[in-house]
Image (cartoon, rainbow, N blue to C red; front, side, top):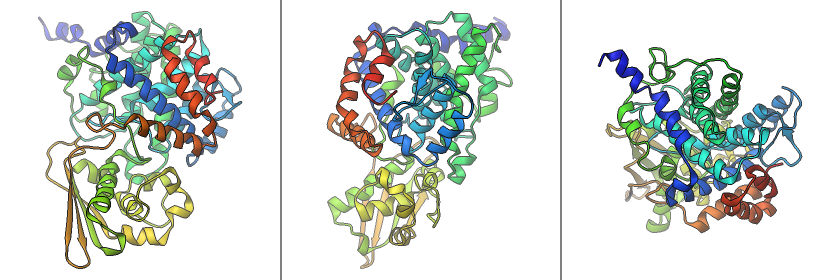
Length: 461
């Protein structure tokens, strides 16, 4: 078969869209169903807490200036309704705004911030969708976004939660609305024209990261609407000479990634975030907690602390703590996170206020902490790692990290999951919605109107 014919036969856009359109709730394994409910609950709670994220009120004011409409609600903001694209933007910003949303570690991707925000907006602006349809669309969107992530084996050039995220959103909406295949493929093609998001904001620790996620969620609705309007999209958005992988990634390993579709679902591989920080900081936080609880480490005794970890960890959170740093910078700073853990036992949403960030005791302790890159050849690895605490009396305390807390290998218990959700809601002043939200999630598979059920929980207007 000629090469051109082979390329047409295995167009990855076709494979991904066909997969999304083929999914049915009744056919999903129990573990995928359970994780869809779990991470919907987690993401809604995190998005509610995000109403108090840095710059969230300014972002809301901005999108309110884009135009008036009441199609869709905003998480944690009773009475606020916006046009669907604007709601997708602010909800995605809030879900990712405090680095508390779930993550797929091998893909280095936060799939739910984009996918959930896009689905909430789409479901609110059209005919009602059932709970089963909504949950199936989540599984479809995560499958597609994560497949693009795991097909990229090298270090990130662009911010994958946004760049792969927009394609996951389009696939999720196609599943939700059971779109005609050709229309869904056109929308997938339009997503390429709207894809964006660089790693520069991560390097500098600037709050543009959740803006990029928000733009992907909003852009997916634009791609969908262009296709619905009859505009054809490009045919090879993923594998074309100027397609996604040619532009956004160093190289691709699409064949093995696509081959995984239909053999389990990527939602089952997603990790909770037990702390509101960059995921790359979580191993260090847990290591410090365990050094304190198991080996008696105290801040007053520390001479220096080294966290020896894969290159990705050094790249993402190896920056220096400094006075006046923004919350987004501090959430990606192991020095700050480890120092806070040594002094307070954990890291919470309250540790990123201006007063907390400028605490001189924390900053002085942070200067004693360093992230050291090891020789791990896996550029997407979070573990293994080792924390080495050198004490002032010459003793050394070490702790090896082989798994990330919150990962499928070390999941949150039901009690820990519920405690996180409650903490998020209380941070937003909506603790009374805790039990209604949990009940709404449990009832969602049997709901004839997914959005109405979520509105009834009190977290969405």
